[in-house]
Length: 125
Image (cartoon, rainbow, N blue to C red; front, side, top):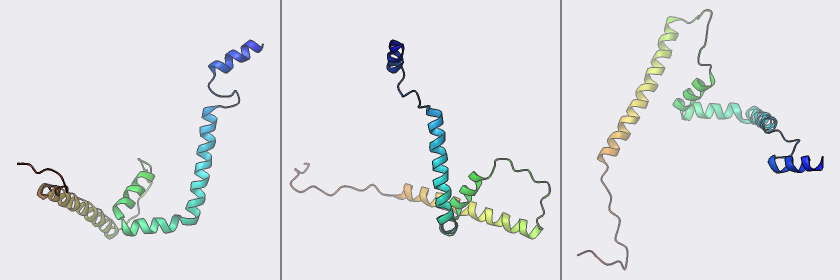
């Protein structure tokens, strides 16, 4: 009997009462509890700050949190509301394209910079 316990101790990298999947589950639950607690205290303020300062990131966050398929029985939205929503999305897309074009233009027009000479270094002939 003692030999069997010794053999198991050599082959098993963790104690017998340790189950990795259970421990991951416990850690996940603890993390979600801490996240929920933090959200209760600071969530609304942080969401408002992100939506005001970085609307595109806010939109990405909302898109990632919503389910990929969203079934509606009936969509009750007025035509002017739909038009306003569409204009907002188009403005966000146009702003993103403009920033990407400016970044691309800036990277093309950027001059290579030379490093200043180091004091005491020999000069090239």
